[in-house]
Length: 461
Image (cartoon, rainbow, N blue to C red; front, top):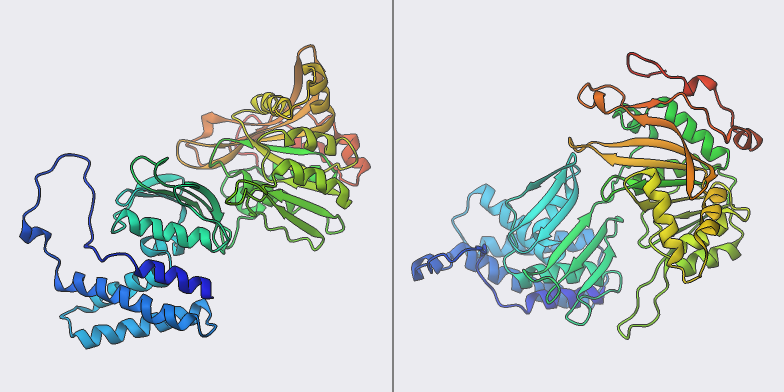
């Protein structure tokens, strides 16, 4: 708690300034009257600094929880407002209470966005350009930070809570909020137009498999197949572009893993929420201020093999760890899961091949493809449509190698002609899975009707 006191004192050390909004053209210099700070703005600046001093000093002497701290700040501020006897309306008074309290103990202007369940991503492109994503659409908000120093103070508060820092020596950082939301921040000199902050919010309730079917993101038949594939211990790769929901989908798939299995998860920043009891969560560690001590995904994948896992879940493969993941899938860890960035299932296979080459071993392409074919069983491709909807666009089996390529057996494909119909877009292709014997051997049963094509109407069981 003393650390929070230091953060509050840092916030109070900045000079008060009037709210400003940067312009990107050469506007005439405002007059002295226009630059004058109103009595209310002056009070807000003074109250902010005074509260930091009062609350920050008390924190070093006593333990206090976040809720109690926020309540104390609000009470102190209400007393200052009454003492000042400002001519405020009820709405103005409430706005001051909210804004100043958020500045002192919260995340400043973006606190309301973090509390808004309709917002899935927050993108701060400087002090006066803050965008959010709602229902897959990006919109500009009217929220601003007072100054670039104000924005950097909020960024510092976020990253310091997990022992990270951001400054001129370390101008970019990945972090996470207490609720699991993923944070990326980058400041000058790398961010030319001012500090930038991106927050991918962590869904408090989380989506379920039933939600995907209800939203037409996935057909009931395809979901049943994927559930059988998890139970039947097929190795599954979730592929998709940025913002297509790969981590969310991986979390849903992991829910089908039997509770008897020992699971090891490996992530850059912990996001997965597995319901099983026998789960070990591993998280990568960045280098310290001296540039040493980093522990990456590859080291954690190697270490997980010594932990007797039944299944390994890697949040995302980005480099040489792909080779270790393939070897794990090939050496008794069937039913493992991972994600990667790619636009199609075939692109995903090419990307894996490239990442294996990044491992530093001089392996021939043919040997790499053989590793891929024997390790990866199913590729689930995710896509974000122009409407912003996130859908499963393809489910394909890896079905062997032929010459210089890998054979794919697509079981379900997206029917783009139905994009505006409100009906289920993912339809069976008529192909049947070649891994049916392996799945049934591991206790999963398949209904052949799940793979039959229908010419007309939505495919609903």
